[in-house]
Image (cartoon, rainbow, N blue to C red; front, side):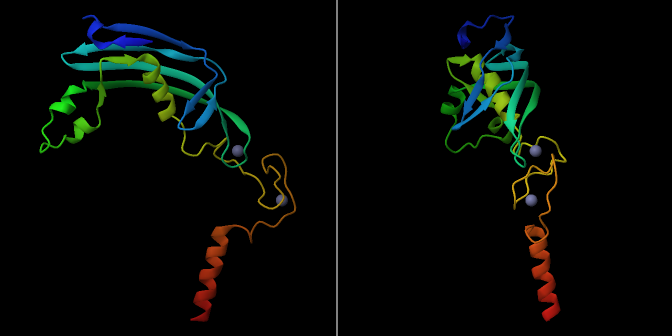
Length: 176
Ligand SMILES: [Zn+2]
Ligand SMILES: [Zn+2]
């Protein structure tokens, strides 16, 4: 929903989030959802500052970075952000650097969309390297078996790059 900043009443605006979308497209990727995005948003003006408070809950379907299995990932975010009017940036003298505090703030134009606010929260909550579990054993690099489900007779020692590095170091030490 699009909101005109100028039309936000004194007491603020409150929105329930109930978004049935099945996927989030962001930066060329696409993340499927296992259920609706839920939560709430509260928008309020404090002078020129726009305060946005809310909660976002979503259940994502991610693919494990080690074993490639799809698993469910829960996102529960509570947040409170401050937005400054875009014109603050335009007024800013070229020689005046924005303070660190201002750099971390977001800026608003004439309108703001609720989707943009909560979808960004979901996106920011995505793990850098999704794992089905911390102890995921991944796939055997030789035969491709999922090592969480079974084991194989392959020797992994030679293939582990950490061991390769140690071996190389040991060989160097021995030669000295
Ligand atoms: Zn895994
Ligand atoms: Zn194997």
